Amino acid sequence: TFKCYTVMLMLQVRILSLAFSVIKEVNNMRLSFSTIDTFNQCKRWFFLNKIQKIKGKSNTTYADRGTIVHECLEHYYANDTDMETLFSMFKDKWNAMGIHNSSLKGTMPQSWEMVITGVNFAVEFTDLEMKFAFHKPAFLGYMDVVDKKKHIVYDWKTSTYRSRRQYEKQM
Image 1 (tube, rainbow, N blue to C red):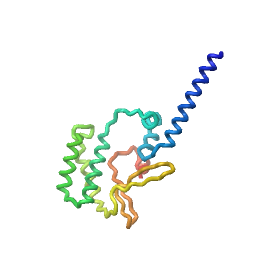
Image 2: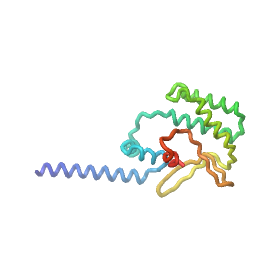
Image 3: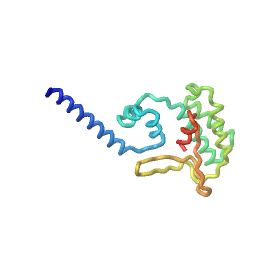
Image 4: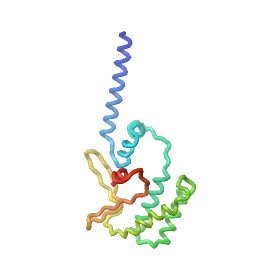
């Protein structure tokens, strides 16, 4: 009986120790939309990845496509580039990142259409990729395009969403 209580007490101490380390880690964590989204989608993955710092194998193809679209739009608005030059830049980045041989193989026309949609907004901006942060809780985010004169924020979207609600959460 004494041995059983000792084992149970040791187990409780271990659980409390783990709980306090998780609380400390969460309190020191910088939040972002993707961190919160990871938590909402799978709490176990959040714990393993963000708390225990266990990195899993990840596929960055969709993020790479988003990067290409964002970079092309930033380049267009910052440099007033013509569409032919912009498409050449888009195609070079697409091939350099190997997306043509990935799970997004064959989606280059739809992805280019995302760039065209961004160009057709004909945005007048004061800032490109503006960083914002809150300190309590620590939260970091980015706005893709800001028009301070008209008080408008634009955010380029390249991902697909399971629902309108999920899309609106990012905004």
